[in-house]
Length: 218
Image (tube, rainbow, N blue to C red; front, side, top):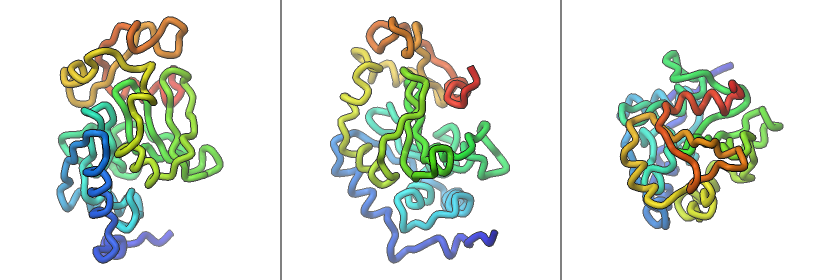
Protein backbone atom coordinates (compact mmCIF):
# COMPACT_ATOMS: atom_id res chain seq x y z
CA UNK A 1 0.00 0.00 0.00
CA UNK A 2 1.35 3.42 -0.94
CA UNK A 3 2.30 5.48 2.10
CA UNK A 4 1.83 9.23 2.09
CA UNK A 5 5.01 11.22 2.62
CA UNK A 6 5.59 13.53 5.58
CA UNK A 7 5.21 16.45 3.15
CA UNK A 8 1.75 15.18 2.11
CA UNK A 9 0.67 14.70 5.73
CA UNK A 10 1.77 18.16 6.86
CA UNK A 11 -1.09 20.57 6.27
CA UNK A 12 0.14 23.86 7.67
CA UNK A 13 -2.82 25.85 6.31
CA UNK A 14 -5.43 23.66 8.00
CA UNK A 15 -3.29 22.58 10.95
CA UNK A 16 -5.46 21.47 13.90
CA UNK A 17 -2.81 22.38 16.49
CA UNK A 18 -3.81 26.04 17.20
CA UNK A 19 -7.42 24.97 17.80
CA UNK A 20 -6.32 22.04 19.96
CA UNK A 21 -3.93 24.16 22.00
CA UNK A 22 -6.70 26.66 22.65
CA UNK A 23 -9.05 23.84 23.67
CA UNK A 24 -6.55 22.62 26.27
CA UNK A 25 -5.80 26.15 27.51
CA UNK A 26 -9.49 26.96 28.00
CA UNK A 27 -10.20 23.58 29.64
CA UNK A 28 -10.96 23.13 33.32
CA UNK A 29 -8.39 20.34 33.76
CA UNK A 30 -4.68 21.05 34.22
CA UNK A 31 -2.32 20.04 31.43
CA UNK A 32 1.39 20.10 30.60
CA UNK A 33 2.41 19.89 26.95
CA UNK A 34 5.75 18.22 26.20
CA UNK A 35 6.98 19.63 22.88
CA UNK A 36 8.14 17.15 20.24
CA UNK A 37 11.43 17.36 18.39
CA UNK A 38 10.65 18.07 14.74
CA UNK A 39 12.17 14.84 13.38
CA UNK A 40 10.28 12.77 15.97
CA UNK A 41 6.99 14.49 15.08
CA UNK A 42 7.61 13.71 11.40
CA UNK A 43 8.36 10.06 12.24
CA UNK A 44 5.12 9.87 14.23
CA UNK A 45 2.74 11.21 11.55
CA UNK A 46 4.48 9.08 8.90
CA UNK A 47 4.14 5.94 11.04
CA UNK A 48 0.49 6.68 11.84
CA UNK A 49 -0.28 7.98 8.33
CA UNK A 50 -2.41 10.79 9.74
CA UNK A 51 -2.54 14.41 8.64
CA UNK A 52 -1.90 17.36 10.93
CA UNK A 53 -5.42 18.48 9.94
CA UNK A 54 -6.66 15.94 12.50
CA UNK A 55 -6.35 16.21 16.27
CA UNK A 56 -4.47 12.89 16.35
CA UNK A 57 -2.02 14.11 13.72
CA UNK A 58 -1.53 17.43 15.51
CA UNK A 59 -0.78 15.69 18.83
CA UNK A 60 1.60 13.26 17.11
CA UNK A 61 3.44 16.01 15.24
CA UNK A 62 3.59 18.76 17.86
CA UNK A 63 3.89 16.93 21.17
CA UNK A 64 5.86 14.22 22.90
CA UNK A 65 2.71 13.78 24.97
CA UNK A 66 0.40 15.79 27.22
CA UNK A 67 0.12 15.21 30.98
CA UNK A 68 -3.49 15.86 32.03
CA UNK A 69 -5.01 16.50 35.47
CA UNK A 70 -1.78 16.76 37.50
CA UNK A 71 -0.33 13.86 35.50
CA UNK A 72 -3.14 11.38 36.21
CA UNK A 73 -3.51 10.79 32.45
CA UNK A 74 -0.61 10.61 29.98
CA UNK A 75 -1.70 11.34 26.41
CA UNK A 76 0.80 9.79 23.99
CA UNK A 77 2.50 11.77 21.23
CA UNK A 78 5.78 11.48 19.35
CA UNK A 79 8.80 9.71 20.83
CA UNK A 80 10.49 11.69 23.62
CA UNK A 81 12.71 11.11 26.64
CA UNK A 82 10.08 12.47 29.06
CA UNK A 83 7.36 9.88 28.34
CA UNK A 84 7.67 6.10 28.23
CA UNK A 85 6.33 4.97 24.86
CA UNK A 86 4.75 6.92 22.03
CA UNK A 87 1.88 6.64 19.56
CA UNK A 88 4.18 4.66 17.24
CA UNK A 89 6.17 2.54 19.72
CA UNK A 90 3.06 1.41 21.64
CA UNK A 91 1.29 0.40 18.47
CA UNK A 92 3.89 -1.53 16.51
CA UNK A 93 4.49 1.31 14.04
CA UNK A 94 8.23 1.64 14.60
CA UNK A 95 11.28 -0.57 14.58
CA UNK A 96 11.74 0.39 18.26
CA UNK A 97 8.56 -1.01 19.85
CA UNK A 98 8.12 -0.16 23.53
CA UNK A 99 5.98 -3.26 24.07
CA UNK A 100 3.69 -5.64 22.26
CA UNK A 101 0.90 -3.94 20.32
CA UNK A 102 -2.75 -4.98 20.67
CA UNK A 103 -4.26 -5.93 17.34
CA UNK A 104 -7.21 -3.79 16.24
CA UNK A 105 -6.50 -1.07 18.82
CA UNK A 106 -4.44 2.11 18.69
CA UNK A 107 -3.34 3.04 22.23
CA UNK A 108 -3.55 6.81 22.68
CA UNK A 109 -3.29 7.36 26.47
CA UNK A 110 -2.92 5.68 29.84
CA UNK A 111 -3.57 6.64 33.45
CA UNK A 112 -1.87 6.06 36.80
CA UNK A 113 -4.49 3.50 37.86
CA UNK A 114 -3.33 1.16 35.08
CA UNK A 115 -6.16 2.09 32.72
CA UNK A 116 -5.64 2.54 28.96
CA UNK A 117 -7.43 4.52 26.27
CA UNK A 118 -7.27 3.08 22.76
CA UNK A 119 -8.98 3.76 19.45
CA UNK A 120 -10.91 0.85 17.98
CA UNK A 121 -9.33 0.18 14.58
CA UNK A 122 -10.81 -3.31 14.15
CA UNK A 123 -11.06 -5.11 17.49
CA UNK A 124 -14.63 -3.90 18.10
CA UNK A 125 -16.01 -3.51 14.55
CA UNK A 126 -13.52 -0.71 13.78
CA UNK A 127 -15.86 1.97 15.14
CA UNK A 128 -13.03 4.51 15.49
CA UNK A 129 -14.31 5.19 19.02
CA UNK A 130 -12.04 5.41 22.05
CA UNK A 131 -12.32 2.43 24.39
CA UNK A 132 -11.13 2.41 28.00
CA UNK A 133 -9.51 -0.62 29.57
CA UNK A 134 -10.97 -0.30 33.06
CA UNK A 135 -8.82 -1.76 35.86
CA UNK A 136 -11.93 -2.25 38.00
CA UNK A 137 -13.67 -4.55 35.48
CA UNK A 138 -10.67 -5.77 33.40
CA UNK A 139 -12.78 -5.06 30.29
CA UNK A 140 -12.46 -2.70 27.32
CA UNK A 141 -15.45 -0.36 27.56
CA UNK A 142 -16.53 2.05 24.82
CA UNK A 143 -16.53 5.73 25.72
CA UNK A 144 -18.49 6.31 22.46
CA UNK A 145 -16.16 9.25 21.85
CA UNK A 146 -14.14 9.93 18.70
CA UNK A 147 -10.53 11.04 19.25
CA UNK A 148 -11.45 14.73 18.90
CA UNK A 149 -14.33 14.30 21.37
CA UNK A 150 -11.93 12.47 23.69
CA UNK A 151 -9.59 15.49 23.53
CA UNK A 152 -12.52 17.71 24.46
CA UNK A 153 -13.26 15.41 27.42
CA UNK A 154 -9.62 15.57 28.59
CA UNK A 155 -9.85 19.37 28.55
CA UNK A 156 -13.34 19.91 29.96
CA UNK A 157 -14.60 16.55 31.27
CA UNK A 158 -15.41 15.74 34.89
CA UNK A 159 -12.38 13.53 35.51
CA UNK A 160 -13.01 13.62 39.26
CA UNK A 161 -16.37 11.92 38.69
CA UNK A 162 -14.97 9.42 36.15
CA UNK A 163 -12.20 8.32 38.51
CA UNK A 164 -14.16 8.69 41.74
CA UNK A 165 -13.69 5.08 42.91
CA UNK A 166 -10.00 4.96 41.86
CA UNK A 167 -8.81 8.03 43.74
CA UNK A 168 -7.95 8.81 47.34
CA UNK A 169 -7.11 11.83 49.46
CA UNK A 170 -3.85 13.53 48.47
CA UNK A 171 -3.53 11.50 45.25
CA UNK A 172 -1.90 14.51 43.55
CA UNK A 173 0.96 14.35 46.03
CA UNK A 174 1.40 10.57 45.61
CA UNK A 175 1.49 10.87 41.80
CA UNK A 176 4.42 13.27 42.07
CA UNK A 177 6.40 10.49 43.81
CA UNK A 178 6.09 8.11 40.84
CA UNK A 179 9.17 7.57 38.68
CA UNK A 180 8.96 7.92 34.91
CA UNK A 181 6.96 5.08 33.34
CA UNK A 182 5.39 3.99 36.62
CA UNK A 183 1.73 3.60 37.57
CA UNK A 184 -0.02 2.35 40.69
CA UNK A 185 -0.92 -1.27 41.42
CA UNK A 186 -3.77 -1.54 43.92
CA UNK A 187 -3.99 -4.25 46.56
CA UNK A 188 -6.62 -5.59 46.89
CA UNK A 189 -7.04 -4.97 43.12
CA UNK A 190 -9.73 -2.57 41.92
CA UNK A 191 -11.69 -5.42 40.33
CA UNK A 192 -12.24 -7.14 43.71
CA UNK A 193 -15.10 -6.28 46.07
CA UNK A 194 -12.60 -5.03 48.66
CA UNK A 195 -10.57 -2.95 46.18
CA UNK A 196 -10.95 0.82 45.89
CA UNK A 197 -9.04 4.07 45.75
CA UNK A 198 -9.53 4.76 49.47
CA UNK A 199 -9.22 1.19 50.76
CA UNK A 200 -6.46 -0.43 48.68
CA UNK A 201 -2.74 -0.19 49.31
CA UNK A 202 -0.92 1.36 46.35
CA UNK A 203 2.54 0.35 45.13
CA UNK A 204 4.37 1.60 42.06
CA UNK A 205 4.87 -0.76 39.11
CA UNK A 206 6.13 -0.30 35.56
CA UNK A 207 3.44 0.69 33.06
CA UNK A 208 4.50 -2.39 31.05
CA UNK A 209 3.15 -4.61 33.88
CA UNK A 210 -0.23 -2.89 33.69
CA UNK A 211 -0.21 -3.30 29.90
CA UNK A 212 0.20 -7.08 30.23
CA UNK A 213 -3.06 -7.13 32.20
CA UNK A 214 -4.82 -5.02 29.53
CA UNK A 215 -3.58 -7.44 26.86
CA UNK A 216 -5.11 -10.32 28.78
CA UNK A 217 -1.81 -11.77 30.05
CA UNK A 218 -2.96 -12.52 33.57
